Amino acid sequence: MPQTYSAAQIVGKNLIAARPVDLKRSPDTKAATIYVAQAGQTIGTVYSYVGGGEKGPLWWMFHDQNGKAYYTKHEVGEYSLDV
Image (cartoon, rainbow, N blue to C red; front, side, top):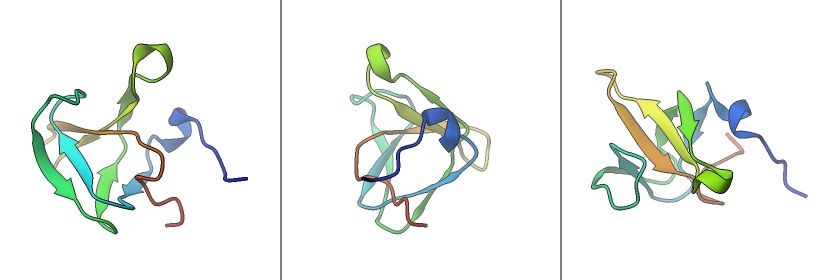
């Protein structure tokens, strides 16, 4: 059985793309994609998360080098857990 983690356990960790991952400026599937991280690329260090459960899909929050937030939607198999 694969290891499971709570969202709080991921905060402060680097996420690595296991497949192409869309990065967006807001946690909304309709928001424009600002960049696509390719498999093997570091997406960033998780700063926080929004959503999840009854609040809708879970989104990971990161900050770019200028302190501006960006988000990726959590999808099973989208992040490498082996790194």
